[in-house]
Length: 190
Length: 98
Image 1 (cartoon, chains in turn cyan, purple):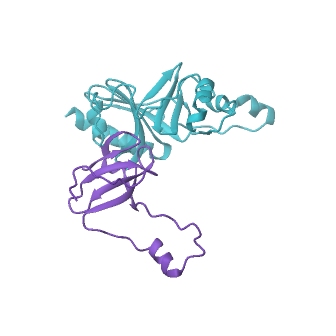
Image 2: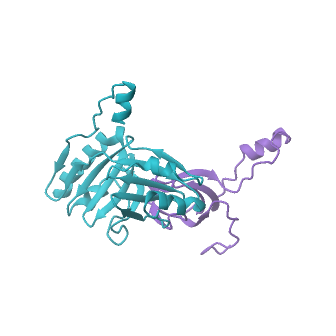
Image 3: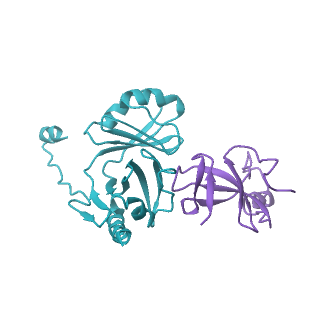
């Protein structure tokens, strides 16, 4: 991107991450605004999955509420033909998908989403303040993921460890989600 | 809160993730321009609104975002069963005597 800007002489706009520098902690929970990542919203029929998995370098999960992770890339099952693929390692997901000839739709949503990390023994209680799902380990195991709601906002929830969740929400809702989580974290500590 | 079983997510999810989408199994006329106004009214506006078992479309909006069909009792508000969109109307309902 920077190279292209030099060539064309276009000055790149300065980007301000929505939750830059924000974090909060209570007795049992820590909230962190996670680093920006590459993301795509991927939709594809069954017949394209093998080719897409090969191009992305990880197997796309087919079972509801599951995810696969490999080399800094994570594919989250959202629906029967829908995935959210996140790359923390700086890879170019769109370029990888562009190589695939089979029918699919890959839309870059890197700047649409903002991720918040919720960690600590009170993470479940904190999230349950706004999320109606059963987040116990039996119902929502490590690696489990789901699109759901948090308060009045749609989020994608991904359990990275027994006491750690990644909350993906839309950028314009991130302030609401972070503030709600901070208050819930305070309540979870009480 | 009601727990509704999504046939695509294969588990029960809280009601807040779902939206009702009206009566199920209403076939759109193949040639909609050819039907009379009365027939169009019947297709477009007239719904059964029964007291008891109703077949409805629901959407798992804040989940897998898929439409599916559900059988619900309008008196007790209990969900009898849910099944994938496109599947035929179930002839036998579990736990319903009639």
